Length: 304
Image (cartoon, rainbow, N blue to C red):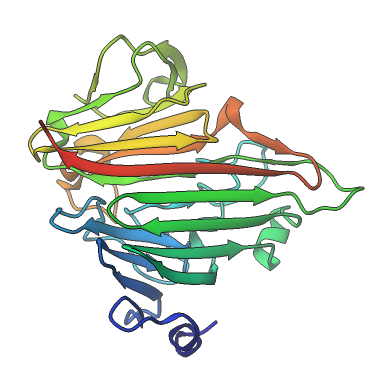
């Protein structure tokens, strides 16, 4: 669907408009009663969510490539059907193909103070070349004072089809005032894989997690709500989830950021990722005809 068709079919005057960047990326601009947001058709990629009277909640790198076929650095990339490098020995881009594919907008509406968008992704030539021919993804966004992101995956291979095995993550970059003053509650005494330390399995000590260096951890078998306390920013961000048994915490810190062409040198200070996920041992297996739904509900409030 091109820009003109999106405007005609889904545009809502003063609330939902569609625009195109100079590089050719089409995006939806939401100016809702309770929040503003920006969503790119490529990747169904939410890059901005700002409830009324709040600072932006999501981090977007000022050096991110907003160009066709390039992954966007920040916001909420959708990782599917694998997370990180593909682990089955087959070829494929990091974090899967969903974040650089064009999604189809299926539904848009204003409901009270919320704006609701529903996106769809199915097989195409690129996914078939990578071995994924029998899946459907529905991705629903409810944009308001809180943000709800719901991703449903179906195996539509038919009665004689094969199981669909996949990983998934909502790779959410939260904007913070100073990553060195951030605390994350909800992961105490949880086992995790430390990707910075050779994938060693460790246990998070009790209490809040405080970031002091490069952090890249996959927390295992956890359904807990995480609360990011942004002390310097004077607010806290809660991430409540269902249908997810992994949580990823990531911050590249200074040395790694210096090697990243799409991040400003001090960008790491302004972001912290808390990712709602099913990865590694929590990968999902769907029999033909089965579906799985993963949901994240994000809310923001001032520190008391």
